Length: 395
Image (cartoon, rainbow, N blue to C red):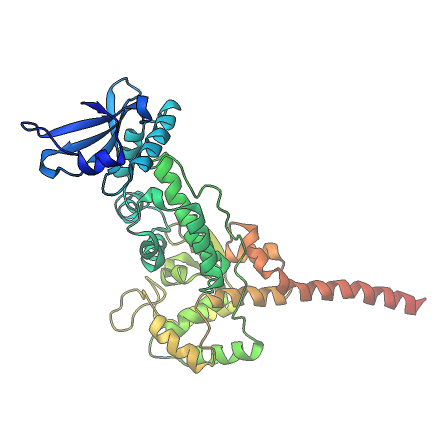
């Protein structure tokens, strides 16, 4: 390890390896302005070029080496500057070699999500949604990046782009960000594959989805008439059931006759079918009972496939035809649940009652229907004015 005055000329003309040796380390002399601990290693097999390294003592007192760069890629001045920076980090207690090894062991976003995060979420009721979010956008956005290379600014820009460029609703944008935040929180604290979480303080939009696709009385009348006439399967009856009960599609397709108490007009949704993962009872009305009376089943599942006799699992294809026929091609099946709530609000039901009818676990979810109750509130308030006017007339 000869100590020499490394110069640009030396790097250009003297990077040779003595005969009989496979390599040599030309050590930078700090007495002539060199960087303490830096050396240039030259291999016999590649004379004329070398690689700058920094030699230092790690936290356990052992000699360690960290690569700075090849002489063909970095100048002597730049190498010395980097050596000084690394020595300053070491003085603070950081080990650059250990940090480098940790970075190498950090998985890519794709590897972490597919091989670690998703298997850990297998029993989460949102598992399928997570898979969908990853396949639709996240893997394409971050897939081959190392997990610790994704920055807060990039994710924040992605979140905003979904809203302002791709036109997603705030709640839909938030699902992507919430998944990323949760995945990174587990990466730091559970799997311990990253030291810091860059997404920790990112904020969601936290804006409720605006209730859309509410039908007028005429549109409801026309839709119900077409659904009642549909005879090729049970799709029409399922849609009517959603409108009559405010149920979720999954709850309806898993409903059994054994869950229905006709006498007390109660439908008990078992825990395995409920979104909240809690058993709950849903009040039925006379319209729902009429639908039950028109079913061609008396036991087992309410809605079955006429051809196979098995439970209906999807009705999307026939529903697309029926909604176009009804003149509401934009209407989603879930919108029937919204229309159930809007009809209830328009007929004087309070938000607390609507919350119970829809089995919302959070009152804030029901607040999306608050504007629909305003007409009833105005009517109630006006009744006070009418009472005052009547009293004045009597006097």
